[in-house]
Image 1 (cartoon, one colour):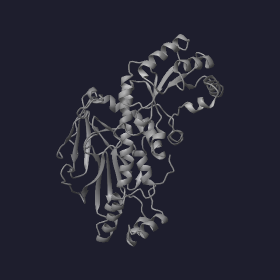
Image 2 (cartoon, one colour):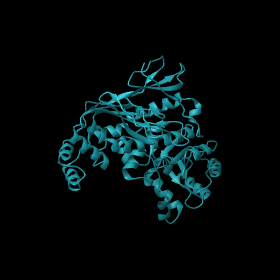
Image 3 (cartoon, helix red, strand yellow):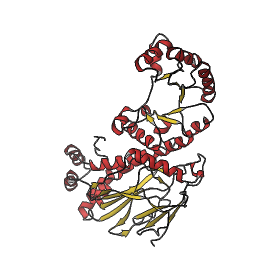
Image 4 (tube, one colour):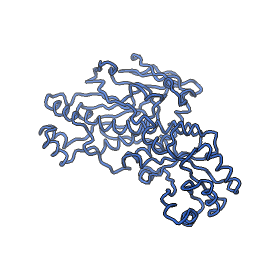
Length: 428
């Protein structure tokens, strides 16, 4: 669990609305806000819900401390009435949403926040900051997992992200099916298995490559990974096996034409008797590069920059919109940004074989349930109190099952329609 407390994770305009609503008497009107995506990022056929458990924890601890309130007063962001309200802020409403690891599509109401207007609107930036980041990383990571075809993936992107985003990205990648992270904070905070090896600097530190390898093996034993591409890869492999013996756990290659080098490295390892030594490749890998290596003798992939930045889609494109006031649906009619009013209920429809065929969304009603339908929303917070949530490993398994359930076309990396069509229907 994190002890990171959100501090002023809200926007100026949200507090403008808080001040005005407190003044005009609309602050406590019962409202419903929904988080959804109008469209998926280009080339994507599904989104992945991730970060919800992190968000609920942050909302539980969401407070404005005296120094923050004083800053807001001093700079004129809020008046005295709003400052007093912020000082006592506690979320007392309800939050429902799709499970972590669930797939989503355009229009899917992945999070529903209900309560008084001001207590809900002040959470917009926090909710979108967490969900847009984690969902983007999880979707990219899930595509990489599919491309890897059962081979192990290690998340190695901490140096390409903000320090807290790096921990969240490691969590989202693990949720999506990565087996390890190099981020030790993520290992400590979330129990994610960690893995890593020495960098080129360690080899350069020593007088020669053999000395560096000998030091690492003496410290960590043969169940370690030696980085063999600091100088010459073929000689690096020979040095690694000479020092560690043929039962060395793995070698890592971080540069060059990986398809060609993987083949040559496997042949060389086998000729040296190291038939069980694994080959790990890294270096700017994304889902397309991983897919291109599917036929090569690669045992593990290390993905960094691409996974922590969403592999070209660094945000999931989620929005947080008011859809209901005092039981009355409200809509935004702006061109290309229109919304559908009313609180939504969603089900995923399946064939008897378990293949998903459709997502059905009903505003202000309950879907006409059919056999093999699965209700998508669950409770996260009731009257301000969080409910027990699935573990990270349970959410990871849920995503694995969801990916199995969609038609095989939905797993393609090419541009195409969403894996499951979405239908919005009137209440039954």
